[in-house]
Length: 240
Image (cartoon, rainbow, N blue to C red; front, side, top):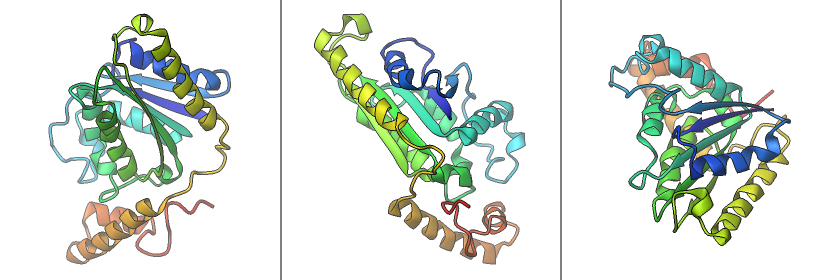
């Protein structure tokens, strides 16, 4: 199997430790590709909207985004990590997710995303770990992913792993290891189930695209949906 990891920071701190604990059961069994932001990620989106117009190659960060997207689409499991920065995901993570706005369901979602599985690993010194996870989940769910697990922790102590209490380290280790074992036991030859919420979003957008296509048949998103057969009877979650 293939795993793609998007790290919201380059620091090798507690978030990194949590991620390493999670990956442990997969090492030697999976091909793992990692990106560390901001080093391996794009700069800030400047709002040129070339991607929304179907010209993704004209984005100033096209080379970087295409490399990340390729890894995301080829992976069986997506892992996103981020510490809480002012109760939200890191700026580097937000910058990367902004570049994939055109992959949201109202635009041109990748059909491969509908069968993928993902986990979000976050931590905060006091509060913000859940809102940080939500920042990331918002994008993943609108990409078409239904199977999204969250594993988040309140440190309530130090920001250095070795200075956390033994009880807190044991709690984190137990939680991460449990989540990893469950995901490692999955048969990844079978796509994940697409839930009702994702299907409702799809059908709402499908209706919208039908209307937009009547107004402008050359509209990029409409042409994409039509080419995929989604305005007819083809559905992205039905894999042959």
